Image 1 (cartoon, rainbow, N blue to C red):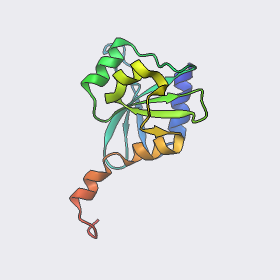
Image 2: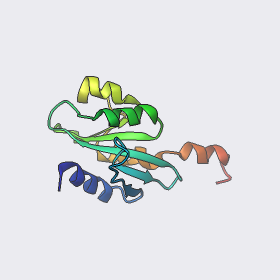
Image 3: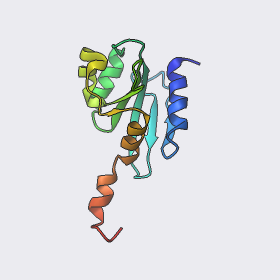
Length: 134
């Protein structure tokens, strides 16, 4: 099993409140690794990367996908440093290519990444039901 496939299995096991559909797509290059869905009825995509250095490699097709789909697209990187995991919003892909892992992530570590992805879309639910009516 490739490192990114192992990383996906690890992340999936540790985020049981998220439903994952692995995308094996050879016809549409650059499509992220998974389509995910959380309990707030929110879909999002995740590209899994494993980095052994401060750089993260992307194909031109992967960069293009995230540029064209900046909302609810994410890149999660397994890093060699102490934090272990870094989550980036897809709209930051150009900066991630330029700066590598020195770019500030929106979340650091498994627990923070899990909470961020599980919480996507929760603002919509709260705005539909004023406090006390949920």
